[in-house]
Image (cartoon, rainbow, N blue to C red; front, side, top):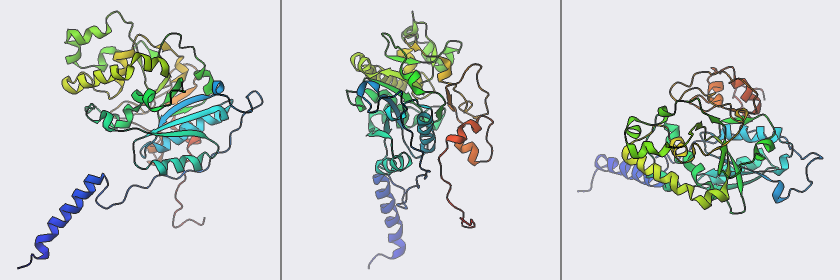
Length: 345
């Protein structure tokens, strides 16, 4: 007797779901639509710039691209170009894990038709087995760890890179940040030596003499990894990716910290960072990692505004609950709202 539809339907649904999981797509076969953006103005070099950028005059900036933070990335790029003294000399290096790289490339090309950029694939399998959960899901995404692999992803001809997170805007000439002298150091970033360093690691870390000794003899200060200037040649020479991966493996076994990709950087570099002026990372504007409450600016001048923390300006603006400082981000938002069916336009 042939099987009835009642018996076969559950098996058929399970098979369809299994194939969808294997393909890493939703069972519906539909993927979320990426946002659309207005075309940015063309930013051209002034008279003080070379007409044709040479290798020694280029500024290289790395950022990640994904669907969740794409709106922030586009605003960040727009802000850099708008304030750059020589915008045609700025080259962006975008890192993505998704199979939607052709779509991301199209969006960047249509939004910034005059931008020089490269798009690289980051294999999430490099870190998937080394990541342990943290206090915020966004910190656990493989792309959050791509900054550790810039020296492997970018061509050997790129000696120096500025790394920017996707939740910031630049309100000054990025050439000033690019030109800082790293001296003999691998990495430069704004440091915050008043921060309580013990908060970034668990009791298990501090109670282990071998782990705690990692900071012995080092004037270790906190620094935010969302804004860094990196000498990629020195990074490769010192095999710093391997050093970071070592701490990730220890974390996976022993749970020595809570905050995603930041603690390995502190363990490897803290105390050996070239200090950059605080104006280049007015961070924490997204509040803490749990509630994302509104914050005020830190005292002093501002060259870069960074919405690190849970609260992102585009989400708060869309929810009609913006923080006062989100108004500083809004002018760089190129997001194009879909026309309403009741609109006259």
